[in-house]
Length: 125
Image (cartoon, rainbow, N blue to C red):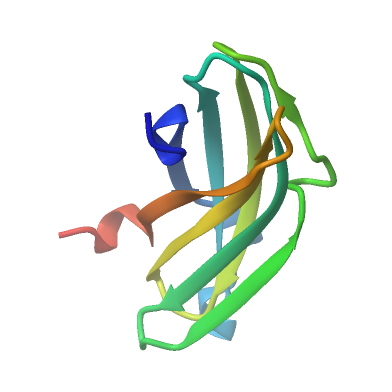
């Protein structure tokens, strides 16, 4: 089984109108990510990398340790879920990236996070 096949990532995003200010070109999106360990041994999430692209094509890179202040261990067959957010200057954009994980043998590997959309519902076509 390939490294990435051991871990699945599911993303759900939503627009947060209460924190956004379209007049100031501030659009806030929340995203909930579920990371499932499909393998036979535990893994730990060490870090993350994001490429955030607004509707005008402007890219912002974000990287750091863990997610939401944690570096979770995910046992075989278990999952870890968290919610975070992103702020962009346009009513729609995208995010994609990868997680840096380590397995019980100390081998690090990347888990790709497929591109997902940040969009106000009225702007989805």
